[in-house]
Amino acid sequence: MSSSHLPPEVFLQSTIDVARQLLGARIVRELPEGRLVGRIVETEAYLSNDPACHGVRELPGGERIHRCTRRNMTMFGPPGRAYVYFTYGNHYLFNIVTQPEGVPEAVLIRAVEPLEGIDLMLQRRGLCEPRLLTNGPGKLARAMAIDCSLDGHDLTQPPLYLQPGERVPDDQVVTTHRIGITRGADLPYRFYERDNPWVSRR
DNA sequence: CTCTGGATTGAC
DNA sequence: TCAATCCAGAGG
Image (cartoon, rainbow, N blue to C red; front, side, top):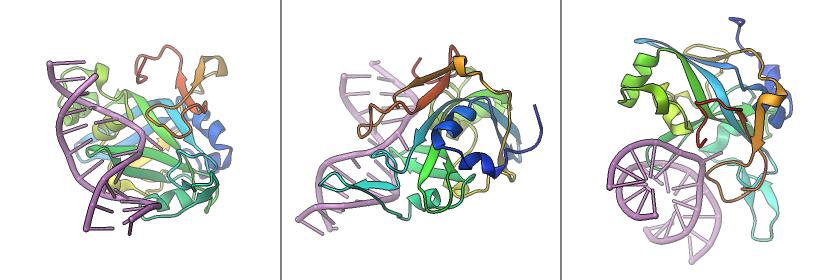
């Protein structure tokens, strides 16, 4: 594994490709108390023609338009940034922005395999054992101390950045429909590593 | 399965 | 202003 960061041009490929390629990459979070590392094992793509995407609004006639609001503004910005938002009353969700400025697409990180700083993550989550530590987007955000203060953060820079990992071969990538949404529920934009115990909803 | 939670959003 | 909705998590 390289110790360099993932370069921004990675995020100019198609968002589907980015979502697949991010499997195996590392999320590094530096805190005063220590360093946390998670290996990405599950992602979802959100595209600019996709009714489930925050940057897309579906009009009554069915037409889809882009709409930049205070919450989703980061999605319209440059690629390789963190898009973090708050939902369901308690949860932060961590996304990575893709595509050039003006095109609202992103990859939601749904699960990671904890590699470093597991004790600190357990402490942050109030758990004693790691099986359910990071197997969901809200869980991993809490474990890794990712909240709205990191919205718009450049993911080549501390205290939150991405590192390449060993690539997950195509035959080990499962493609399926996304979780927890109603609009665009049938689209096959969820990717996870086959048989990995850290994936959500196995 | 149900309950909780809080902000965003577009409609009114 | 207001209520529906929202890319969950925890507990039973």
